[in-house]
Image 1 (spheres, rainbow, N blue to C red):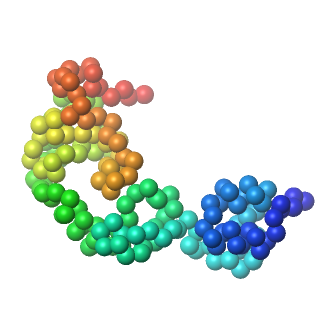
Image 2: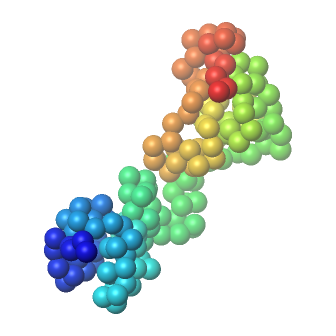
Image 3: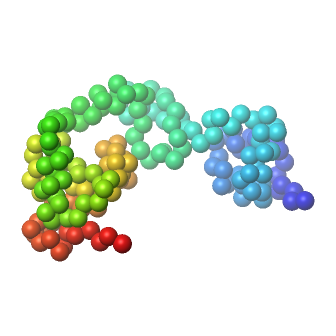
Length: 174
C-alpha cells in the first residue's frame, strides 16, 4: 500500500491555502485520484476546486474565477466587462454583412478554415482593408485576445509586406 509522504491534516491545509494540485500531489506521493479521495473523506468541500480570487479590471471588486485563467483580466460581471470595453476605444461598430465581407477579403490572400474568426483591429466591421484584419484559429483565441490574454492571430494584415502575395499567406492545411 502506497503511503502518503505527508499526513492528511497537511494535505487539507495545503489545499485550503490554494496550493496547486500538482505541488500537493508531488509532496504527498499519490495520484490525483488518491488525493481527491483523501480530501473528500476528510470532509473537504471540493466545489471551489480550481477557483481563485481576482480583482475586477474595471471597478476593483473581488471576484472568483478559474485558476487556469490567472493571466487574463477578470470582471465582476457582464456590466463591468461591457463598460470596460466601451472605455477602451471607439467601441464596436457592427455592420450587417461585415464578417461575411471581411472573410471574403481575407480569403483572397489566406485560406480560411471553418471556425476561424476574422478580427477587425478598429472594431468597425464595415472597414475591411487587409491592414485592418487579422485571423484567429478559434473564437476562444479571439476572445482571449480581447480580454488581454495570450490569444494571438495566426495571420495579421498589418504584418504582411505584400498583401496580394497569396503564397506567403496561405494557411497550411494538414
